[in-house]
Length: 75
Image 1 (cartoon, rainbow, N blue to C red):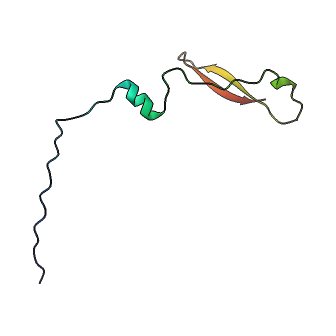
Image 2: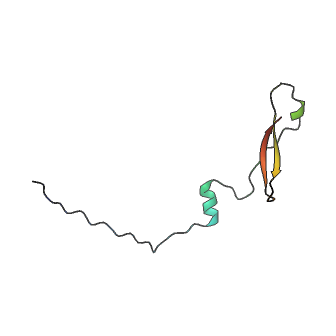
């Protein structure tokens, strides 16, 4: 025959107290810096390499909405 046990009282959770983060704290926690993202730049002598391997170039691509983003292209 199993005995009945009473569960321990659980503390009530209050949803009225919410903490909000500032934008700077959110950026710091997500790893984003305060300035623009650093985009790798191609070497100045990238076209003079004669190794036979493809060379990656970074180009800025603008979409139809006017947003510009970096994109890697292999030449």
